[in-house]
Amino acid sequence: MTLHHQAQGFIAAVAAAGGPGWHEQSPAEGRAVFASFKDFWGDSPELQRVEEISVGENLKVRLYAAEKQTSDQPVVMYFHGGGWVLGDVDVYDCLCRQLAIETGFVIASVDYGLAPENKFTGPIEDCYAATEHVFSNAESLGIDRSRIAVAGDSAGGNLAAAVAMKARDQNGPPIRFQLLIYPVIEPDFETESYQKFGTGHVLTMADMKWFWQQYLRENSDAENPLASPSKAESHVGLPPVHVITAQYDPLRDEGEGYASMLADAGVLVTQKQYPGMLHGFVHFRGLFDDGEQAMTDIANELKKHLSNEASS
Image (tube, rainbow, N blue to C red):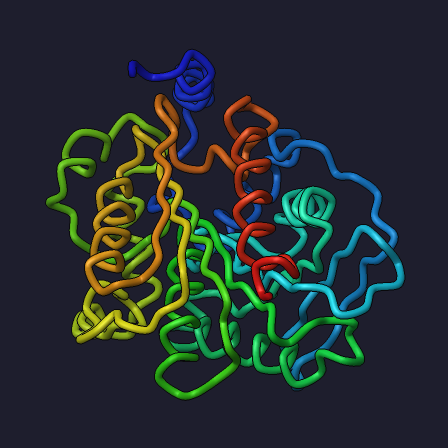
């Protein structure tokens, strides 16, 4: 499919604005710009339950639920995108609210520390600690500890994959399901999708190289499976996964390659590519009709794997 007309309009608007790429800004400047895109994030529905909990001294997790009183509800641990450098729970507030409405589950959005101030493995440790905390305090939080999913978009998808792997390897919280939305998997800039879409499609190869540089402590960290999930010696025993990709995303091939790798290891995998779409179309669903459809698709996948019927 050719580039969707809404994606064409978005690319044209970005080009007309003439702003610098993410790699041409400081982290602080990039965070301010990313937060300013509020009009593109879609509706922000009212919920009966929105509260913040503390994990240790510095980590915050925001809980969302459609109903004020919840009991034994599934929980989706959500790790936001932004190249490990940009974004926070406020930037992703609209998305998490909508996900809570569409699933009826508790969404736990993790305000992990950002790079370069908090380099690898810091964001992973934050996300894992938040998952352990929710698991350990499930009863008081109204959560069913046997129905936990990890989810994230872009760099958040990378963190979700890493948390699922870490939980498997360390006998940690039982992760029922992984939802990876156009995930970052490894710094391989030679893929076909990087060669085709690494310039002129909003997210660029130069941006991604810069994000990886901000995140990793040293180049050799890229061989660590917690940074590059494709590098794991084995993917056997990982939770079922749904992988979302966008046709015109430079990250498309690594996401789809990881889905194939998991399927080869016997993991239950579903995967959907959204034709004509760009990286970020789910987060910026106020601009993309397919972003709205993807939210419904995401909710259906979560309900399929986390419902009482799925656990029986």
